[in-house]
Length: 557
Image (cartoon, rainbow, N blue to C red; front, side, top):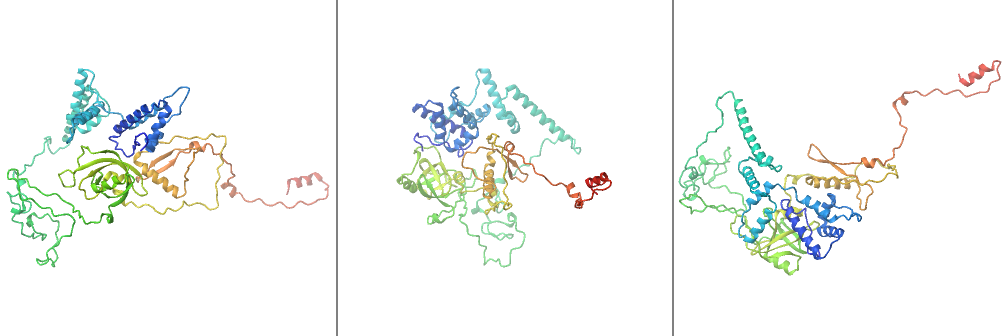
């Protein structure tokens, strides 16, 4: 944590649905800090923003071109420029209709105080437009009611694309209704076998006692209470299991069971860690609703968690701790014993509070957990990245655990179909011709060009990084650790197979390459035969007819 008390703005770790709110909170803290330190120079304020924001915020600022050179003659406000561009990046264009829908959907949470609820309502009200006069307010409310209650899903998408007036919304709704009626008439008229429009479907009535019918014997009156079922002690003639009749057997088995299966050798189910799901014999005679116990995964206290595959060692606030990876949990939980250990070890913690309105419930249990406190700290695994995330301290906990999102960010939990993807581990160098070095002649009078980088979709950033690392390991490209005079952008090409291809735009760089002229052999030169050799020159006596002989010597035979 920095000396200013402002945490880095980890924009990559924040959920996109709340990133606008988090950015506004962080920017407000920064402005208060700059005002308290009496920092008025625009360049210093911009540098403070980049320094306190961290590496992730710096990456965003440089990628969107928010950094501008300071011009002392024009006295540019570079701080306002970077704030406006970052606010535009983190705060997408708001839809007034959708914001008012969120405002009307705000509900009181469990054990939420009035002041906190009022603050939440005021924050959302600032993003809404309720009209400047009575007429405008009436039109806005009518438009919102039509979109919320009447418009179908496909029409809602069209109406929310941009801000529309009430008359335009009414016209689009009427057109949509007429098109729906006309399309039904046209689809029904194509059926020549019937002259009646098929606009209604016969409704199959349900048996009034269907909910009371037992799924084991088929009788009515005792529903799913196995204690009163006559098939409780009988075996099925179809599958051999006990507890239901063959008529109501749900087994897909069609072949006969092996002859070795007799009454003396009962079928044994495979051992599982999941307890048997029992039924409560007490039932309400008025509602006839059976009460079942939920599945419960056994948690042995004698189990050595350190030897389990789902336990990892992590650095929590500077203190090493063993935690469990729980893919079914959304929160990170620390048990009370581990909390005492990290507290006595002087771990680095933020926002420690014992008052929280969050409610945590264990799996298949309706009773909430007893939360002792909540704090924010860093967590890191060996040879991994470090992130900042909140933790809850729970009393009487069995083991400390990290949730699904935290485990995915740390890279210790992988979900999806690409988990079985085969990747090359031992990459060989790219094939090349030995003892051949190509030298490019560069024109020294051409000025180097540093082109701006093209934006890469966030969904393919990991694939692009993987391709670059693969090219680096194959010795196709080389890393650069110093300022480069030439910078060419990369372009992502999507293949039909779903893979990507990385291309480099070298048009500006090719202008600096000097063209070299080489004599190339052609096909016509190979077809021409080699000329005959001339006989050697010899001395002749001066002839009687000298001009004729001289002409023969000059012209040749």
